[in-house]
Length: 165
Image (spheres, one colour):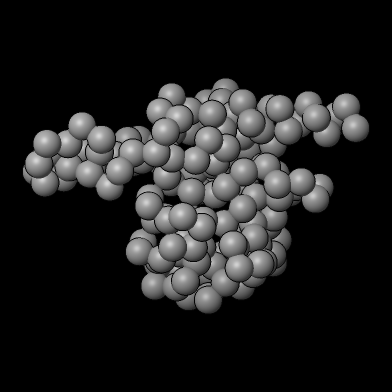
């Protein structure tokens, strides 16, 4: 039991970011106009792009180790795949598998699908989604898979992809 607690603690520490603990409204809490909100939105996109470019830093390495072998489950209970090698048929990183293909209905990488669409409430890529997929390991919920900074325990799918599974 102690080792499980340690791995959950490491995972939680790797997930915590410097974002505010309170959710920010769609246009930013300090936005005075639509234009200010758009600028803040662009800054968020740039911040996410920098995360994509991030390689195996120490915090990302901890995240990679903690998430390895975890499963991704949608809020509606749909199994979305496993965080594992791109050769694993169940992996979310296997571009030819059901859960890694950009064409599969059960893939987070299908930008037109229910679980990967930018505007879908169940997608990890919708910053304002209220029901992004969850990450489970050894039967324990570790957090959510989302690009949103609003959730305390969450992992950005681009950071997981940077792990190079």
